[in-house]
Length: 171
Image 1 (spheres, rainbow, N blue to C red):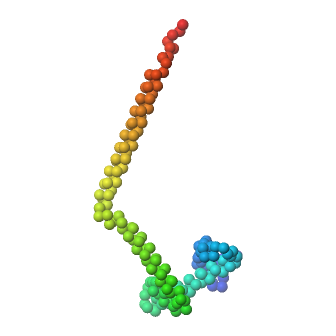
Image 2 (image 1 turned 45 degrees about the vertical axis):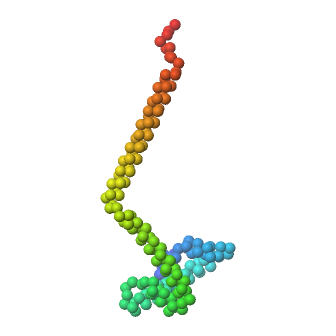
Image 3 (image 1 turned 180 degrees about the horizontal axis):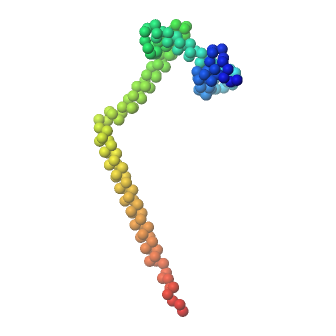
């Protein structure tokens, strides 16, 4: 019975796939109004409103994209959709978020190319890594050898300082 069709013609499981994660919505609510308790019914309503808004905005952005004979919805299409739907007041905030997203993406690209920007070929870096591994193995073997020698010396010293064993006397 959980897979019955709802008003939009989608089954409940298909509809669940088209909603925002409840945990994300709950986290946003807690961050925005930490001292206010929100009923589960109200949380569900907020979730549905957010989902519906995203569907409305993306559909309008898609129409704008099609009118401009483009195949990919880009940020400008979304900003135009905000204006067309009467949410022009949010355009400045949306542009600020877009700017932040672009800055984060640029930072990620710079970090991913940091290795390439070293100016050292990958083969040279691999050779240096192998040298470091070999040096580390050599140092570890040397430390183990010293530890073994110390144990041997301690065993010989213990044997030398032990009282003689007179098991040969049967008197």
